[in-house]
Every structure is written in structure tokens, then in C-alpha cells.
Length: 246
Image (cartoon, rainbow, N blue to C red; front, side, top):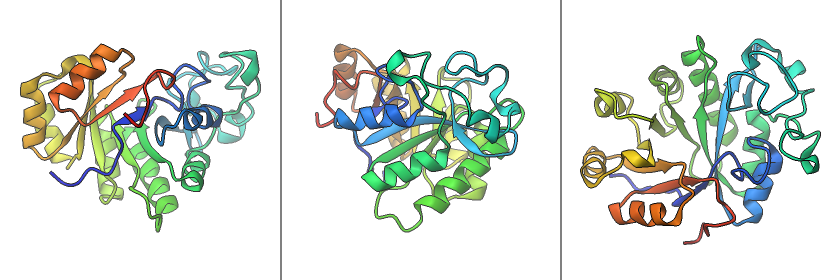
């Protein structure tokens, strides 16, 4: 396997559930807890601006309505992405991917960008997320962004556009052909629902030259079990519970 330049602990959506997910406030709070690598979700606005949001729709984490990818960035930028979480964060805006990357570069943080496309624009989302990440990270003396996705089509777009950025295939089941797909996409990692790992699967992934990462681990006994299996990284909500130096 190639050298793996990323830390074992990765903060989920910035600071897990302690702050409104995928906002700069969340990444600042995660950093205050000592984390130096963060996972986020990126998709495209209607005018193809990559921005951070997990869901396809706006209702759960903003005061907007409808499919996020059907709105222009100028409209999305006006939304409140913090009040749903708590009064402390009322008025927190949605950030662009560019804003998050500039924050990470300024503070020497690392990033795992989950490409989270609106259905129908999977490949295009992978292409543009990769373009923005590569352009902004160019020349930085830091390990590059890790691009992950459940969508092989999005990873195909990223590979075709910026092959130098490492990729990871996300899995919530071990569907038929998953390892061959990861090989075809020249992935550096498999990022699984933690319950899918066992010694055999970890060995398969390592034998293929890839790293074995897990989401979303919030229990200490599960973290110990995964470490014992020899996995290579954990995405967690509990930035207040797990020391990233461990």
C-alpha cells in the first residue's frame, strides 16, 4: 500500500452533532476539540457552484424549501443553516466548498469531501468538486483532499477530471462487484458502514492496496474493535468524546 498521510480520526460534517452540520461554525468547533481532518458533503447549486449540504432537500437543515440543487447559489446563500440546531447558531449560512477549503488551508486542516450529488447530475458533480478542490489546493504543502462518494459515477467524473486527487468508495452494503468497482476507479480507500467490516474484508481491501475507513462511529467499544481489526480511519460525530491524538 502507498503511504497514508491522513489521521485516524475524522470529524463528521465538522463537529458531529455539536454544531449545525456542514457549516463553518461546525468546522471551527471541531478544530477547537483538536481535530485536524474533517468530513463534509458537497453538491452543486443550479448554477453549478459547489456548496456544502448533506440532504437533497433543504428542509431539515435550513429554512429553505425544495430540492437544493434546483436553487441558484445567490438564493442558497441567503438561507439560515444554523437556527434548526440551536439559537446559538441562528443565522449561520451555507458555505461554498471554496470557503471551506480556504478555511482548511489557512489552518492547515485536512478534508474528506463526500461528493453528494443531486440525482441526475452525478458525474458533473464529481467533475466540478474535483476541479475546485484541485485548483484551490494546488501548491499546498499538505496532503490533498480525499474525495469519497457512494456514487461510482461521481467518482468516475472526479477521476477523469483530476486523477491526482485520491478517491474513496463509500459503502452501506457490500454489493456485488464493490471491490472491482473500487479497483476500476483507482480508489485509495473503502469507507464502510462500520458494521460491514470483519477481518476478511479488511484483509481484502488491504491486499488490493487500499485503506479501510469507517463511518459513523460514536461508541468507544466499536472504535476499539475497529482498531483491533487494523482499519485505518474513523469518521465520528463525538468530537467531544474521542481524542484525535489517540
